[in-house]
Image 1 (cartoon, helix red, strand yellow):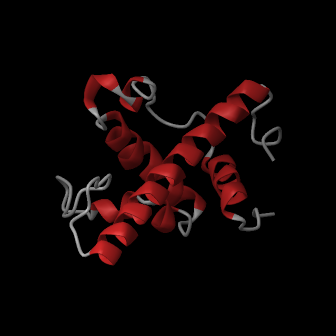
Image 2: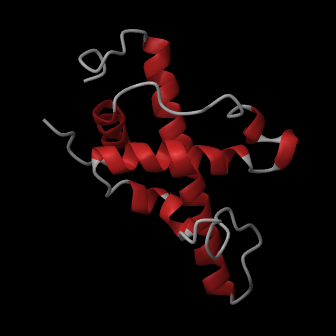
Length: 128
């Protein structure tokens, strides 16, 4: 899958999958906090994805893994590159993970390769 998409360097494969796993992890933490808040009837202590809309009137909930994993290849690529990465770069200021993602502009591979990588961690079948 990666070789045919132009990724021959194993470190680049690991890098691309790591970005997707980090996005998924953020969504999982947000879900756990939401469940805890519902169970205890207290507000969420840590809201990773802010409520409301972004500057272009789009829901920030669309940045969550549970939404991303259902997108087609082109939409997934556009959303991750254009909205998710810039969002990650704003998390926690200078003292956190945002430093590690500061140089990310976009995935360096075609949308189909990103889609294939995104389908692996979720248990979905990769496209043929």
